[in-house]
Image (cartoon, rainbow, N blue to C red):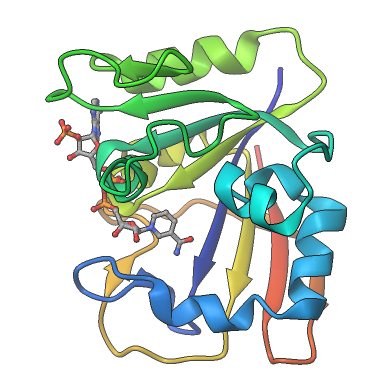
Length: 194
Ligand SMILES: NC(=O)c1ccc[n+]([C@@H]2O[C@H](COP(=O)([O-])OP(=O)(O)OC[C@H]3O[C@@H](n4cnc5c(N)ncnc54)[C@H](OP(=O)(O)O)[C@@H]3O)[C@@H](O)[C@H]2O)c1
């Protein structure tokens, strides 16, 4: 069974963006050292356009071969005319309103999202599934998440979009690694205690 990994950037107080989800204040923390880390360990989490700009188009996928995201997150790329933001991965977008997929590489999941994710997890592949967010989809899939990779940037927001839009429920995770960076960013990885 392969893993569903929620790989997400957040503030010290656990918000993945401002109240409207805007996460652009996080971009400056992706400096040279942090970018090297991403290129080394998680190159497929860099969107295709960014990979092209960095000249790393041909870096092979290391951890993930599939990405799952909510329609609101996907919309950010779509509004910029990019219908396949992770063209180097199999892309799944959760949506009940997108009648048909805007791109041949993107499959729309309109019903039984958790069931579709369980099917993807059951596939025979050496690589895992990247849960990109946002908050609503992560909240709906919280019970399916096997691993967390949390990139925490050294800012406090006070309020904002939570990591999970879900109800109160205690789920236990165990820490696998903690890595800190010169700019104050910290990346923690956890696996779910089963
Ligand atoms: N900090 C980070 O690393 C990071 C990463 C990703 C995203 N974000 C931020 O997250 C924000 C978006 O998050 P969000 O929570 O508002 O939305 P989201 O989770 O990206 O997308 C929500 C949408 O997904 C669809 N959906 C949700 N559950 C579904 C289900 N069970 N079945 C079918 N479709 C389902 C619905 O689309 P329809 O309305 O089409 O039905 C829903 O409106 C963005 O502003 C982005 O900046 C931050």
